[in-house]
Length: 182
Image (tube, rainbow, N blue to C red; front, side, top):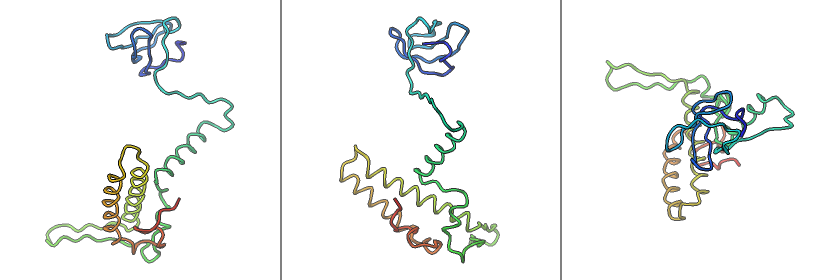
């Protein structure tokens, strides 16, 4: 392995010393912590191999920043994360610019007002996280069918409790208990 390929914190494997972590990199040597202690080795001749996943991109036809941006957007989409303004589009028009007021029974305590857009965003994120959790439960290879059914019952109860907030949604398909979009 070339010294240029190493970086501090990198996981490596040596044929005799086993797995290790790079602690320092010099011009021709690297300090690597193995289970039996710190060793200074010349990676070019020591038989060191990477012990972590890596990727090499070649023939990239778009700037790296765009690649990372697209990848991050795809990940967020798969996780069910919403764009900052996307939830407002799902909020029924009569609630736009509305406020949720929380007033304690004790008049000496301060009230709290929360913009409905902020509260609604949190409700939508909860709905999306419940949907992702449901998918993960259904697709889990180590859970028995009985365990999946039991966990689904808890999710169903969560959805049922959240139906109180369905009146905030513009579209019935976005509500709790509505079918998730595929």
